[in-house]
Image (cartoon, rainbow, N blue to C red; front, side, top):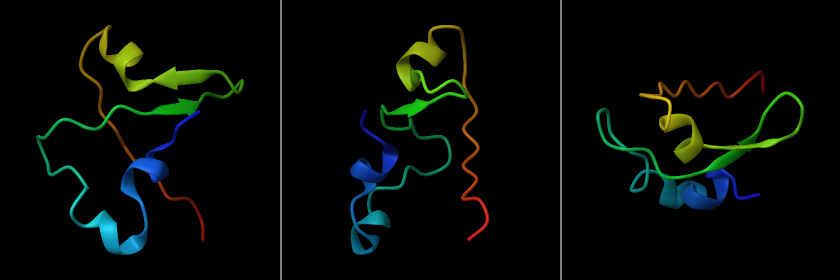
Length: 58
């Protein structure tokens, strides 16, 4: 499974690779509640997708 972290790279690379508001997000795959892979491409087949990234409690 490829995650968004692999796309972004290290901290010094993040600023130049984060999509701006209104730009398309990069293709990625994450696990759902049951551990199954879910891709952005599969979700957008049903219609527009709103991505809300929550970093959790650090």
